[in-house]
Amino acid sequence: MSVDSATVRRVAKLARIAVSDTDVTAMEAELNAILGFVEQLSEVDVTGVEPMTSVIPMEMKKREDRVTDGEKADDIVANAPASEDHFFMVPKVVE
Amino acid sequence: MSDLTALTIAEARGKLSKKETSAAELTEAYLAAIETANPLINAYVKVTEDKARSMAKASDAKIAKGEAGPLEGIPLGIKDLFATEGVHTQAASHILDGFEPRYESTVTANLFADGAVMLGKLNMDEFAMGSSNETSYYGPVKNPWRREGSNMDLVPGGSSGGSAASVAAQLCAGATATDTGGSIRQPAALTGTVGIKPTYGRCSRWGIVAFASSLDQAGPIARDVRDAAILLKSMASVDPKDTTSVDREVPDYEAAVGRSVKGLRIGVPKEYRMDGMPQEIETLWQTGIQWLKDAGAEIVDVSLPHTKYALPAYYIVAPAEASSNLARYDGVRYGLRVPGKDIVDMYEKTRAEGFGREVKRRIMIGTYVLSAGYYDAYYLQAQKVRTLIKRDFETVYADGIDVLLTPATPSAAFGIGDQDMAADPVKMYLNDIFTVTVNMAGLPGIAVPAGLDAGGLPLGLQLIGRPFDEETLFSLGAVIEQAAGHFSPKKWW
Image 1: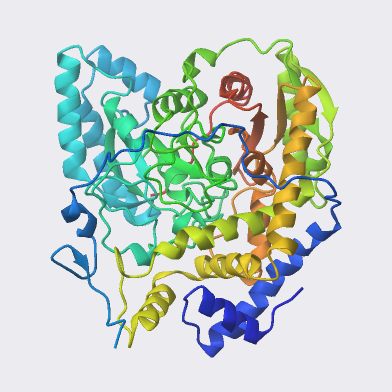
Image 2: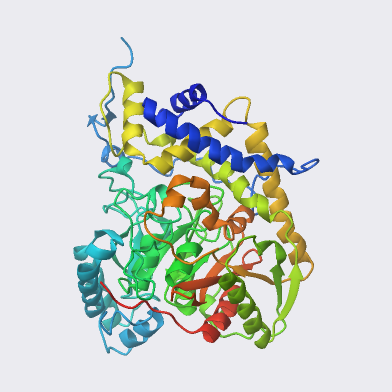
């Protein structure tokens, strides 16, 4: 399978990465080189093989359902590019 | 390199306990070494002098009171991937500009609780994606090693290039690192240092910037096998904040150094003999086999039939997980924000400017292989192949093999800005061909320096163990180290 420039643009949109025309040309070639390399996986017979979910077999750990963290809004917004009254500020979303 | 910075952790520990030196003196020696070398080697992206001095002072007070921890007063470098409270933590990426977490990663918290002193944050490939440390926003790290008679700058390997270079150049006593596909073992091999990736789940991943969560594991890079054992003992722990960390006692790894390896069965997998592999690597491998034989181990030829599929499967699984993990960098909660005409435009511009080329490439691959219509063909197929890779290892271990011996890398260090690798991403990916299988199966692996190539550059051997049997890796690693000797770069910086 290989990707064309329209697919590169669609994937960039899904990944929320702005791309220029030059980027698209370069990425198309690079992605096709990588996809060409991984293509060989299709020759492996995986009949009856379960997909890997965890490398080390372990039981899912559970903890008591109670609040163990919180009351630190200052810490949460400390690194935000823009915040006000403990809210993250973003461009207007609803007109 | 002063006498103090030439000490291993074990040696420094001895001198500190005998009061022959102090944590403050040790720290000053390293800070002075960093000041001279770092402008040339670029191993540190942030030096935390004040923090280092105050931690050293606290260590000296504890030593005076007889309350020294196992790593009391030992100056360490910390990879920029580990969250360190109030200190530069940017995964060597532009998108995390200015990020100073309000929390400490579990691994660094463990080290500091044991008395370690932090010298600063170490350079790395952006988000740990790379094998040469050239994808860092802060520029490449230079390998302290150069070819004999040459002044060409070489890469230290990656992604933990800053960790490996700083240990080799004696700019820290030891360093933290992480390994997703070879990022501890490949740079260790390229710089003549020791690096161990423990079993998945041995160290907590909490507070480590996530790349591919099912593969990421923290581990140390150190001057020798003993130091690596000392550091891993402090780094490893079960952690309620990481449900994949295992609830299993951390053994005294140092006690395994020097333990007899007589009767151990060492598997030599034939699939690691690659086409076009340099003769020097083959010779090194044979030498390693002989050393282990001489030490009383038994050598057995084994087969891991799915080896060649590990790297292609990795380049589906790792980017897929990365594309999900890196979705959080959107210019809202931390780091860089590039304004846009609306919120989506802001996301897209922020991510376009904040991520480097290799990171974007992997996010794109990951997004593509997880997208509707391709999931089964790529991701599901890769995860099934991963089961087969793991089964290969389980089969040889069930047949009574204790450890596998392989080369660590397909070549010695290469030049910064290598044209072939810049032109073809897959060429760069091939650096991890011997290490990536270990991550895919979640096993422990150690890289130990074993010799020099014709140009005088270090080469390493890799030992792969059974799950949670790091001790045997330290025992066998010490045998290789004993036979091969130590390797240090000639100072040019």
